[in-house]
Length: 288
Figure 1: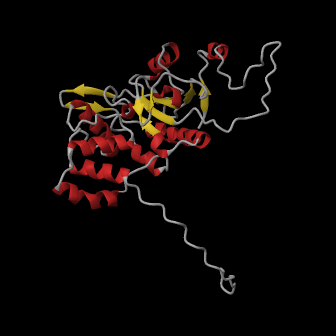
Figure 2 (figure 1 turned 180 degrees about the vertical axis):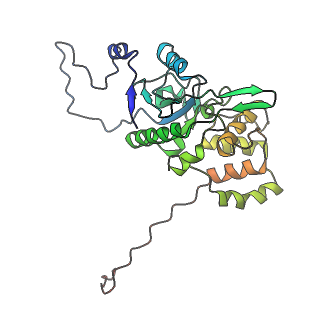
Figure 3 (figure 1 turned 135 degrees about the vertical axis):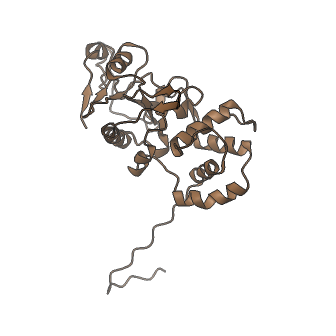
């Protein structure tokens, strides 16, 4: 993976103080940096994935000359380029009004990645979504692994824009290959055998609206907790289905969605490691 710093605004960005090295203090001020506080953490807690809804030239223009921005842009060339637009130490304006778990306004706690993709078009036959190029996803996986390693991002904190803004955003859409990210060890995925085991019970008795709302909120979604199946709840369900069941994402409360939610919110316990057997012929001392 090759990351290119876009030079269109490089001078302006440098003047704006994008360098991560602290500038020298003004004359007469001495700052001692030999101590470090224990109570601190990385600014970056989340990675948010977007599509640009534009071609490459327009995507670059929007992301470099307007208020909206992103840390990285993955192009749609046959051999995609990954552009670095905003230094990771700085906030980019990619998330907008957003919520996830205890956080809101996720710009301050996230890295935003835009992928060049038109999104969708509405046709007489229905909405048609544009697929992502495999080479784009290959580069994205490398980029995500690098960011995750450097910032220790948890698997449940790699999200789509629609997940943190389900009432107003659709990206990265149903054709984004979340399962590929799961296969790469980047995100959590519901184990199919566990989903299948829970499905018959939910087919016999579907949980009520409040159960769906409570369980979606447990994952992290901002969803009403009213027990009323309103438009806002349907939108959040549709976003969840877009990620974990992209073949059908109509926002309906159904047995398969309930089983997926159940598995994701009830992970298997971590079993203690089995004791290592001593090699043949080696005696171990008894424990007193």
